[in-house]
Image 1 (cartoon, rainbow, N blue to C red):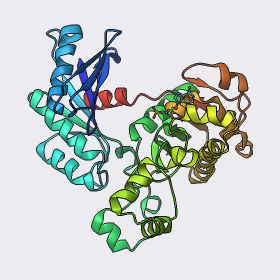
Image 2: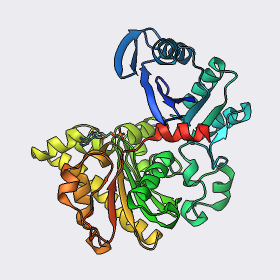
Image 3: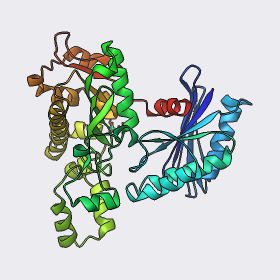
Image 4: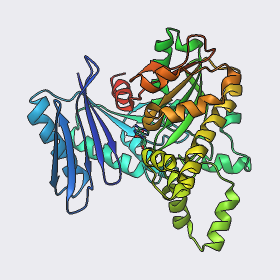
Length: 389
Ligand code: AMP
């Protein structure tokens, strides 16, 4: 059974083709710069990577070019059985993946009010794919769904209740497929049922969120109504006092669009360090004595630690802490620094396993009261699984 997973951005279209009889990816890639005179299309087909520059005026031409390559190299005459779509925001309505109908697409467009950068593109991607595959089931998988049922007191903001209700202003949380995936893999590493575990999952990448997972369900998560809240990220500010927004708008003469841009694209690691949003460059600069890069790096690890401490009380204890995403999977420094102040929880990191191990593994000592794991995330596989389900 072949399942195509699509992740549409405003000028990009990522794809991944899975053979779900074996749960393996057989092709993947991405079209970028859609709408510009010269777009890029990168495809890895049957292990062979190819990059083309060609005009792709809209997502439709991008999808056509992707399908042409898939049919020529791997699919031949085999049909695609289902298409799974990554959708960032499911609003208050969607607590689970859903078979796409016209109503679902309209809802995704409506929820652009919470995710103006993502949902319009996600809806466009779905419409384009439905035209290309009108007779195949399309499934929307929401980043927010895993957190849909966090307790009411964990999702409410301290603003007048009527306004929360009127506009659906609440904590939604994101990276849901990732948190669900790595929590389930961690239970397997521990050889214990997920439904009996207290796990704190740390998705630390360009976007970062931490999640408290109790018996396989999200109890709280660090991102909010939008992915701007929580830990500082590559270019996003994380949690700040709302009065900072007011002050900057007034004294820097910024309108709504300019302040949104500043907080989403010019803040976080990039804004503090002035070096880069890429953590590898931050680490390098910090190691060479750049003070602002050191400060950005230290704030990231401090924020992650703060959330872990907080979620240990949300869960009333913790069995496992899991690191994932680009930084969580690869930075031995971040994991060591975060875990160094978690000894009160009974965390004992195994430096050898942390530094020299590879891939999915346990990185705590055998007598550590809390098991610490590294689990590379696989959101695309989760979306394909959801489509099959
Ligand atoms: P993601 O959003 O999950 O793709 O993660 C991207 C982030 O992971 C970027 O900040 C990268 O610099 C960071 N990253 C990737 N590889 C490494 C590595 N080997 N060491 C430290 N950070 C890394």
